[in-house]
Length: 409
Image (tube, rainbow, N blue to C red):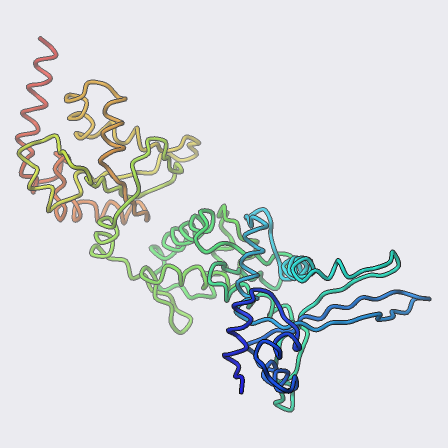
């Protein structure tokens, strides 16, 4: 006798929805009722196709069909459709929009649009989920708004941000979990929360909601930010914040920041820039094969961070971005590379081939506080100032000085 798992396997192998009769034949069951009973489970969905006409404002069903699909197939289908629609922050998908996309594409998938024979006929394709009713019986039911949103969440690829009560269903946002704009939004909320909490460490969740909504945060999320949205974002920074009993606590310390700066960064890009109010640290990590300072080759195998840059906010009301290339030009690393290679293009090539960057952003006061502690911990070879642990400081100063003398001669 067939089982639920057998039905799922057949549907998986077929790839598209099937009727009870088709499943009965494939599974070689004598009675189709046996398959119908197995399908009445939350592991399946029911697709209803109706071919109908209107006469004197009344709807007449000419033909109807029932197909079945696994819930897992539907979830994957949701992901496929959203990917097909090239979901972006401008799309602003909400539950009703997603449902419309699903139903339109389901009609194409099962070919129901081809079943219309005359110009008077219409077709409607919809799906139902299996749920418990008030009598604890499993019945087929039309999906609710929350059911549609749950299907999206279950894809594990998308994140849904729920609007506050002052917003509308049209403000539901469905965003790829690892989308660049989402990552940027999460980071902006993290920084804004830190700025509020550094001056007010005992702030409650309730007050934090008010304070964050009072800020002009350039995010992709609709205002006002609901409690659910804010907590959802902060929980994605769970190593930075602890949320318990309507209270929030900063978990950041020097060890945590050091660990983040040691994580593998991204390839050096001279066009990277930061907002003028940015405060943070950049670790320049060496990940190449030929280090230009022969005497330090063994040293940098143990200490990958060869330069630690501090980003300081520009003067108030400045509109100019902070550029990583400008920051680098102030460093002994740049001076050393220029003395070695003599032109910007060759220096840039070396940086792109050998350097990765990892960043950490916080308030200016906190960055100023931890900068000397991290400098002491990392002892980056190309930080010559305020770096007493740099074993090569004298060697580098002598090299830069001798190169300078040669150029003057």
